[in-house]
Image 1 (cartoon, rainbow, N blue to C red):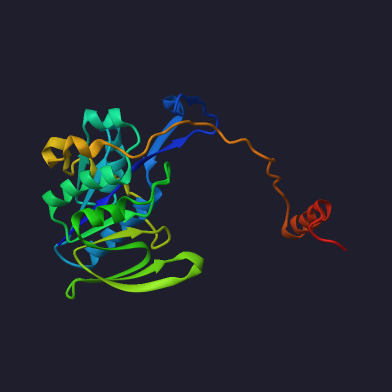
Image 2 (cartoon, rainbow, N blue to C red):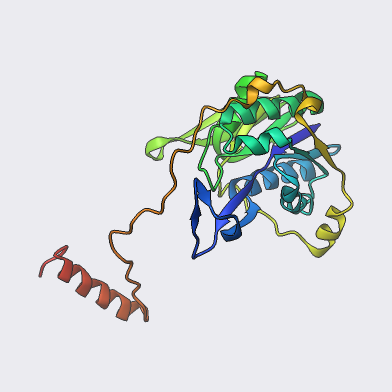
Amino acid sequence: MKILVTVSEVSVPVDEFSIDGLDIAEQDLQYELNEWDDYAIEAAVQISEAYDDVEVVCVTIGPERAEETIRTALAKEVDRAVRVWDDRLADEGLLDAGTKAEILAGVVERENPDLVLSGVQAGDDSLAATGVTLADEIEYEWAAVVNSLEFDREEGVASVHRELEGGIEEVAAVEIPAVLTIQTGINEPRYASLRGIRQAQKKPLDVLGLDDLGVAESALESSITVTSMYEPESESDAEILEGDPDETAENLVGLLHNKGVIEG
């Protein structure tokens, strides 16, 4: 059995950053593994630990810099990784879900996984449609916003709890092959051990281009265009109440009185 986990390297601005054109200045950005994908990795590794002969493969779309991020996934017991990049992707800027799905579909065709796990959304651009768009592209069953997962390999069924709007939770059985988008909180992602970090440097990491995946040039025509970038003005400053619980509660009551929220 094979599980493919899609992971993203997300950009995180430093506290004091500047905007350069339509993006945050490169020197003000740090990069890390997308939080939602970390939970998807843990879900995949837990399945591999519960059953024999389960291979976990991570795939990311990103430049050479992204290898540091995907090595983090490898250090968390992922078996091997695939990085997809092409100079034409660098020229495109922000990729929409359709473009990412077409690229990832090429990887799915090569790897033929039984299960694809993806984080619900990306922490930087907040796009949250890649997983379900991929499922549609490869014609797999799917479930989105999964916050609980039980997998029965013998039956080939994933029993999932899905978080819906209004606090409603849905329970569903999804037959594999399937794509599941994983919500934060579904598990407790493990830390990469020193042993895992050392081993990650020796694990296979294949680099593929668009031609390797048979992705057509037309797939790069993104429907998203960034038209402006600015830092929203803050309407007010946050006030932090400090002290022990009694002191904090007293200060909060005083604040609410002053704001006219409570009377008496």
